[in-house]
Length: 208
Image (cartoon, rainbow, N blue to C red):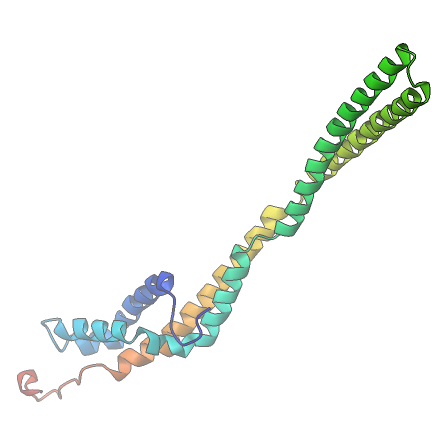
C-alpha cells in the first residue's frame, strides 16, 4: 500500500476514465467551447494528468480501503490448511507402503532363519516385528483412506462463493473510490482550472 498520496500504476486507467467523464460535464464543456481550437481542452487534460497525485489525494481514504480489500481478495485463503492436508496425505500414502515392505522383509528373514533352525529366539522376534509392521501398515492404510475421504468432502465446500464475495467486496470498494475521486477530486480540480470565459460583449481574441 502506498505510504503517500497517489495511486498505483495499474489504477491509472481508472483515473483517465474518470478524467474523460469529468471533462464531459456540461459546465466544463461549455467553458472549453470558448476556445474553438480545442487547445484549452488539451491543456486542461494534460494539466490534470500531471496533477494525478494531487487530485487523487482527495480520495486517499477510499483508495487505501480499496487497496486493503483488493489485497485480501487476492490472498490464498487456505494455504496453511492445504499444506497440512498435503502432509497428511503424503504420510497416508508413504506410511502403509514403507511399513508393509519392512514387515515383509522381516517376515522373510524370520521364517528363513526358522527354516534353517538357526537362532530360534531371534527368528521368532523378527517374525513378531514383521507381523507388527504389517499390522501397522493395514491400520495406516485405513487411516489414509479415511483422510482421503475427509479431504474430498472438504474440497466440495463453498469456496467459490467465498471467492466471489471477496471479489464483490473489492469491486464495491473500487466503485466507492471512483465516486470519491470523481466528486471530490477531478470535478473540483477541473472547475478551478477552467479557462476564463470572455464577457458576451468582449472579443475572445483580445482575452489574454
